[in-house]
Length: 111
Length: 180
Ligand SMILES: [Zn+2]
Ligand SMILES: [Zn+2]
View 1 (cartoon, rainbow over the protein chains, first blue to last red):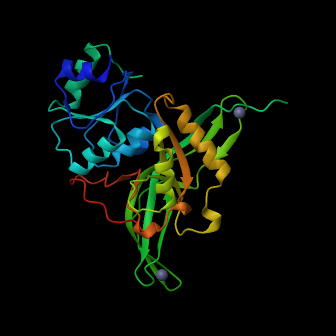
View 2 (cartoon, rainbow over the protein chains, first blue to last red; view 1 turned 180 degrees about the horizontal axis):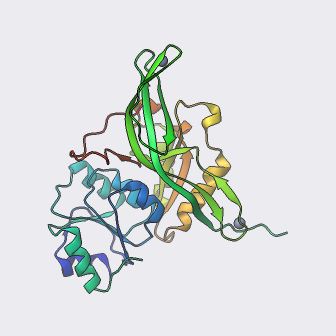
């Protein structure tokens, strides 16, 4: 599945400009160091961490998109950095647990 | 013997803290890795060091899956993303030059205070670059890791260091203070 299709399927809100790409697997963490060690290329990174340093971390490990859950407000400087790096930054009011359930239902599981 | 086309993987990963401390007399800043977070203040010669920040971090080595060569990266404090904050900074110039090839630049930092012996060698930065590129879909984009010493003026740099500050606090994420 690609990012655009996922956005439509789950009613996610895109916050930045991005190039559409395939999604493979899910990575769940609020820590940059964890992402550096364990996130995989093409993953969806699900987090409540909104500080702008998530964008360089996401870019370093080549995740497909970052999804901010629980309706957390995303600071403008985070959005700007995502724009600059064409990282798909998405948000949703759904809590992480609910979102994971839906992703699982769509056949996107951790990898 | 043919040369190994190394396939790097992370090994000996340890989660700990980058401790930032400052002296109230000379205003020196130094950093080190610690397995536990501490907030102790202590004296050393004429200096009184107190901790200003504990950032959760990861330290690791790399190992080639083919030839088992190990490369130590325990002296890597972190990677900083160039945010193009200073014109004619060499890191920013490299970023501009490599942008058409979709290559993102990061600067590697050793622990503070900076000294020639805390620089991470070009050969090791190449290995680190290879490692992160091997984890990427390089048909889309790449990364390149340069030494922090190319930054024009570290004290004025607004690059984004990738580490976890304030993760132990239940309070909202505070705005980061400059680190240097
Ligand atoms: Zn090898
Ligand atoms: Zn001092």
